[in-house]
Image (tube, rainbow, N blue to C red; front, top):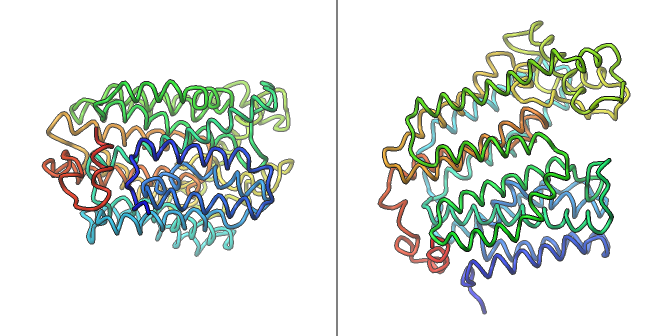
Length: 469
């Protein structure tokens, strides 16, 4: 009998990818419940063997669950299934003695919980109480929990590499499945590609983008760069082709900005330089927003919002953003209440399916509209503290790790300005949680930089050593 994690990680990744790829690609040819059961059984076995794969699934693998459940015409249970896989991961990590009983990030965790309490307070004056309550509970079960989990894991570089490989594989599976779907069904550039109606191509592109960033992280951290280069070349058709053909501009722009940031700051830089670059990125985004709001297409949208001659997706966002600015002016301090924008969005876009525009598709505007300037400050304080105050490291080599995670955070944050609400952009909190954990882990370089084979006596030690090469 094979003991957990005794398979060589390189072979394990191949086995996991082939099996999940086959199940996902052939899923349409089996009954719904059998497909779901087979998918969860196989995935549970893989996660039990390699627990960090389960964490990665919850970071950028939601499309995989949505695809399988969508083919079965079952939209419920996705969150439960994902959290079940996460629970299996945490049980394995606990048995490997990688969990901490106490976190050094108590202050950061309290700051994030203050955001949750702000949403609870916003329910008191919400015009959409039921939706606001659901949104608040989703924030607790998505954002707060996914922020907290990395804080309780005993990190070293080998485990970070394991996580990066897992994130890469999740995206590669999604990319290749989408690419095969495109080839099989024929390429039609006039429409966005998608596997099934339930899977939004934007989320596939976000998953793939995280995987590309993870590959760059592996290139920086690992010694055997020829293997990473070969793997990247093999993955290119499934990754970049699918992302470019999807036509999702937000993830593409966010990916290039994040890769540029990592390339510039993979070596230690002065904190003032980092702040200047980040402020420059935000200034570019803000300038683009001003140009968009003052463009002829925006003016045309205001006079004829049902005009389909222009990019209706982008124009709808502009209209929602303009309405958000108007609402902020009316209630700048406390906002209009948790979830209240959904009624305004439904009234604003009467020709679209209900609840599609239950949020402005920009989390900063969303937070300010529903919770006012006070809420925006409360939600952004953890980001500022973790990125600007906690990430200063004296040794050049160690900043590689943080630059990669800041790249993840930038990717998620930029995407969050163009789509999804606070709860559906959990990647922002997940990535900042990992960065907070690594910020403290690297302050113990003697432990952090050595391989797990030297620090653990668990069955997984040999696998950890192999991954760190």
